[in-house]
Image (cartoon, rainbow, N blue to C red; front, side, top):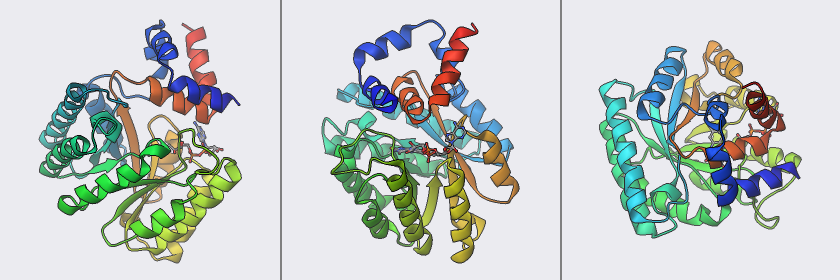
Length: 305
Ligand code: FAD
């Protein structure tokens, strides 16, 4: 119930304006977001890399409504990737891109063209891009765009959400040599005919998908904080003889940081998803919807100021 309310609020302009302008909001979300600027993002990236982690950087922003706004998002990624290149961080830091932020809802061709510019800059910086998966209505278009981009940039990463009823099939289609696939549970509201709604079904689907990806030829990127799924991932890696470099764990910045470092200590590859930028509202609300403790954390930080 609370999850539904928060997910609805994440799409509401009125609530967004109220929260974004509320005093202390920015400070309260700082646990989950690196900051507003490229400098902030780089500082956090360098710290995480220093701790043995890898990073994927997300410039916050979604649902772009005009081509100028989409272009500004692209420019921001280009500036970020130039800095990654200059700092020599390309082997450990990649970019995560939401196609909705680069014009997907306006025109698919525009989104392809914009995403292509970001992929080219990533390649020049010695790194790559992963296309985040968003609302269920965008899945077909996102997979089409992924196919286009992979022709020239084969390391472009895909994301599959296990809450989708078709997730296992998507994973089977994508489990080929060189294919980087992030598996997550899914963070958006979706109807019952498209997505599983119970946690148990979503988790079971995650395990089925993980089996397909770990048995396949690609590079699985297992994005979850769930201790049971992390344990099963480790067992599947042993079963399929996967070395630490042949798959990776992924977690969000600010969530289970001790577990991220524990896995690194065991020799695993762990990548932290680091969001930055001014448009943090939708991202922060989805984190609240996932876990009431995150909401309690933010409310506590309001109360203690
Ligand atoms: P949950 O069911 O939320 O949590 C399972 C268990 O994990 C909990 O019971 C608890 O034991 C532990 N846990 C979770 N949070 C915490 C916490 N704060 N502190 C301590 N323990 C905790 N979603 C998309 O829809 N599209 C994307 O492109 C996408 N990309 C992602 C990239 C990364 C790297 C990650 C990690 C997530 C991404 N997500 C994405 C979000 C994802 O879909 C889930 O909404 C989110 O990860 C929560 O699911 P979970 O697997 O952690 O499991």
